[in-house]
Length: 472
Image 1 (cartoon, rainbow, N blue to C red):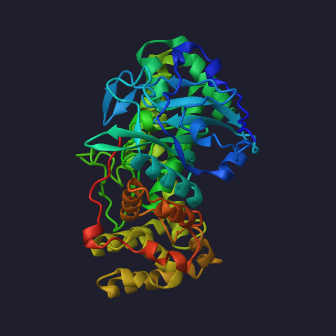
Image 2 (cartoon, rainbow, N blue to C red):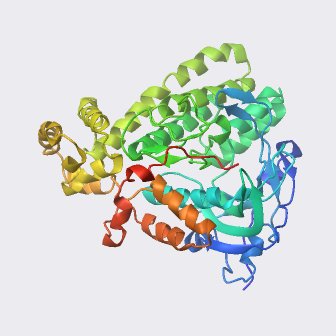
Image 3 (cartoon, rainbow, N blue to C red):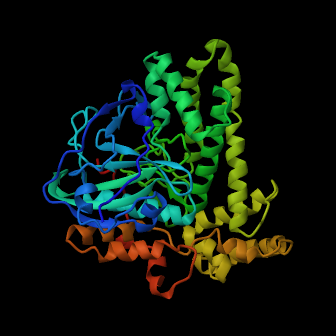
């Protein structure tokens, strides 16, 4: 059967100010690494037995109904504004309306140069492609709003970074690729007409209940507050929370130097390019507020009197830290078995985190240990945990089914950095078995499976990953 993607493209119908028409650059010898059958079915895609899947998902063959383009946006990168970024190594093939009625983008990443590539080659090497595939699908299984991975293909060509590396293309799926930076680029150019068109499009696609820029901003803020609190509850560090990597839809996007913490410390940084900890674990709550302030600044251009709107928009942004605190409290409350955490429960959660930091306890295994009775084993001085545990047991005695709640909020498995790196090393050598095994394990992260007990182990000292890399 021939592959059929039921494209229903709306972004391509916008004015050409928003994008550049461009086709993927063909590659030498595409070969399929993985195809996400379940996601394909959800998207209404048929014909996954097509022998040309590798050609289709590498960009060598353009599927019927596609309307390839590279999107324009700008953004603040580590606090510095870059007036024009855009898809420098990605091509949006088009959109589908899935079996659930949700419109989603299908995008090739690593598919060659575009007018926004600047000095780049537009390609991706195998490591970041497999990292994003594994991480995004693991995040989905963990219940986190995220872009998804539909396919991964080897290109049969080398990509030169510090050295020649095997090339690859990822097919990414998102509810959209609209970013804070998409609004910023038109606001910075003073193109109010394009900004209004973008606003109307974003409202119709994501927030149909929004009636004006203020209500739209509030809706975006709420999604971002919930998303970042969810990240924090899992020990996830995005690593590069630039405004061009901040999705309007509230999905996790752009898995570059991302990582999950092993031992808990709020100032943990993995990203090799984050030299001052701007995007550390704990800083993410502050940075998302900063990002929303940049969105608010762009939206001011749509107000009848922008100057008069500065004060109410500022007041609106100032409500966001409390949104995040409320989301954080509910997430972490559930992790210790509390159904509806109250303000006074924050001290109990905070005390545990302080003990974890002092003991350098493993984040994931400590919280899961509350379920199976092994949390005490994570502490060098278990008596410090015992005192906390007595107070905790008294608190959750008032709760119904606290263990069931903790089982569904504290994963057994997360994609650990040393396991991801070992998987990439094997794949570079042509061995995809570790990739396949990780994908199987991470599909059910809250279930105990003895076959994957080794994946629960934190890294040995010689396995610790000190830095993660963007891969561009």
